[in-house]
Length: 200
Image (cartoon, rainbow, N blue to C red; front, side, top):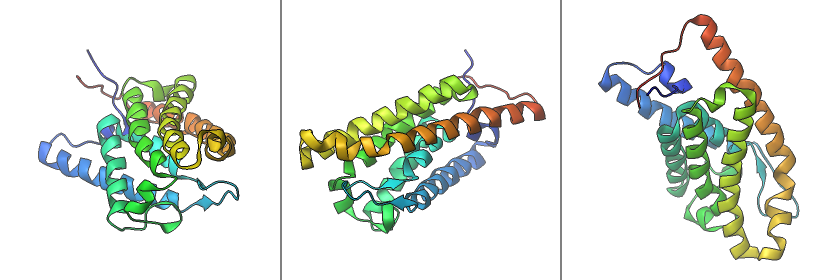
């Protein structure tokens, strides 16, 4: 049975030694890109969680890199922030961020990227409808973790108002953007030549 390749698989070297280096560069590079997108942040006055470009970068990492590399990319990002690199939203860093209001979302990033990566490996990122669904499922995963942890800190009664509702419109726009970019990219690749699938 053949599995659909991800964008990262298209350029992966056939030599295993170079392939390992290629994967490492993608994982580290992707983690730094997420950190850069996290700095595009808007403070929401009534919420401890800012609006950022972070979630878009996280889910795109899953789609572009696949479930394993995507999950490792998010893990690397979290470890970078935990050891003191200013990669979290608004230049924050440290273990305290992981224990703060946004800590649950950060944990959910790993699961969200893994889900989107897994679905991308099934070819869901090649059509608009399934791309929308894959990104929506990834969002649901990260919100499940984020809201659960946030509710422990601020209470269940306020959690949706400060941890979900302010971000719905922005996340919808990010999903639409992904649904335009990902299938369009595969169409462009198909125009340059056939894309070989891989064995699981």
